[in-house]
Image (cartoon, rainbow, N blue to C red; front, top):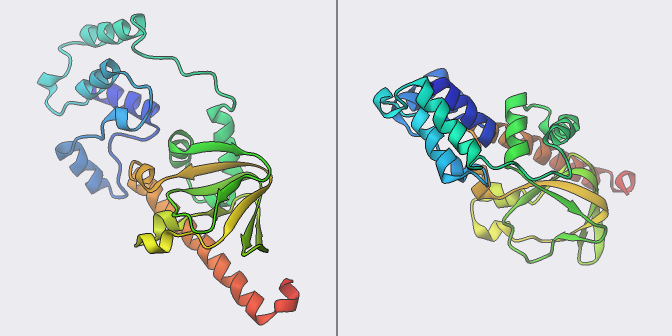
Length: 241
């Protein structure tokens, strides 16, 4: 009963109720911690569905359902009363989004579990030509990973960079230790219709520790590549231009 509730939780939230990089840490969470409220991890979860799954995850088995018949009847009642809402028809299926993530260099270190978590927890946006993702002087509160299309970076009206699929922008909103470092110093414009995957720092807190660790590693690779490109431009300006 506990295991089934954990599977249902994972299917709905896109992440397990407990997660850590070390087995001992996971066991400690299972024995002593409460899972994050399911409603905080996925929109549209009804109070009744939330309560049923968390009841099934109760550490004290006396607080769970008395029998499988009771569990099955409670779940059946939720379906009958439409307390388990059907998802709205999606323009892009989750499976398509998963396969798209698989092709992006940014996510090459992510496993299937972590990619499904990104699919469920990210904000997916389609942005038209000319859309300003960021404007100079704005304070960042999200970052974007470019899944399709192209963007360009302008500083004081001059184009300084052209970025393609798999790169990220605005990551200082997540990485910066102070608000002052989150102010954008350039305009970032869509120059080919784009699809982006975005997160806010608050949304990142709901990801599992392992997925956050993989994001950190991916950002390190991005920053290293940018430092290398800046070094090459200083050393060989004509070659870069």
